Length: 124
Image (cartoon, rainbow, N blue to C red; front, side, top):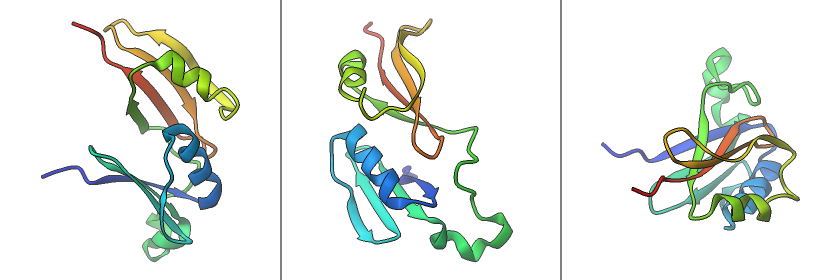
């Protein structure tokens, strides 16, 4: 079994796509007005409108209510990425920091409040 993707449900697909295009430095594949994907060699981040999960009724994901998932990106230089994104980031949770286990990490929230982590692994 392979992890295929993480899907973020939002009320505003265009806004979230613009944010992740800035973070990832790549354009999303817009498969429909209500759905976009960022495909990478290791997985896909999908962004979808609430209409794509409406058939789930009361059990449908609720945008802006996530408090348990962190979208993580492995990067070469956390500090350089953080500097590049200064004009895009509105809610910085953790400025670049070396974690106790050696990883370098910065955390911020996307426009819907989801946590995003850019990190580099500790060198052995």
